[in-house]
Length: 330
Image (cartoon, one colour):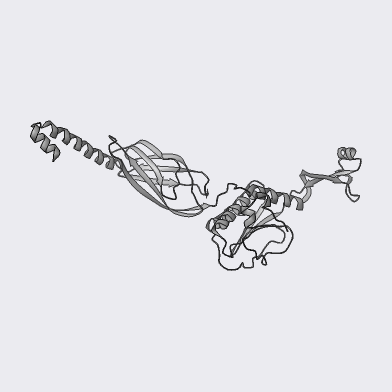
């Protein structure tokens, strides 16, 4: 109305032409932007094994299903509380019936099953006046393992476990364990003559055993543990079993209420990814008598724990207090 009144009063029809051109440009810009986003198909290709809060190599595949019309200046970003794409992607041009394949790093914020990931496609083509967006929900069940990166105190606990198991398994391996005084019943070929000359008494070399023995991790889910403690205990279990089996080549078993597995780290990580606290008292669980045992429990009642040597108990104080107190052998 204002433009029409001004044009009528001033008798200048050029105002109509200018306004009509501007409105037509805005309209065409919006229609082209909408056409650019039409017919786009998105696919996220993930690796077989994904850990929470750890970058994982994946591939983002964007396909233009339109026959002739290309898509220009496309921005792709992740949205929502479970955003998995740290950095947005940019596709300058995607011709019709073509597919763009980009290598990306995805980060899942939490463990468990992720069934829906929300992504946003946007473009300001052709003039940048308007920004059109299209939200895409990828419905795909993705099992995310607990975080395998060390948290404060986890490495100290790992070194404590390695030290305890090395003390319990001395033998005739290749790695020197210690030098100690000679015992008359031992073979003389183990005598370390250099150390004997320094000390003035016979000293023998003692080596670490090649068979380091099995380690059993027990996660107590009963007793209604606090969510904070339970999540930290799950991550600590995952870190220990991964490091012990991957880096230190130990035979590791995981035991919990209603679950037991040995030497299958992916089955154990799958259980930890879906593990939830249980209400009530702990139930009796079978344990390996020969294995060195690590118990994670937030309960003061440990009557169901087997009373035998080679055991380490990790409770609330051990997980959240000074890392130096993260070990309590019995």
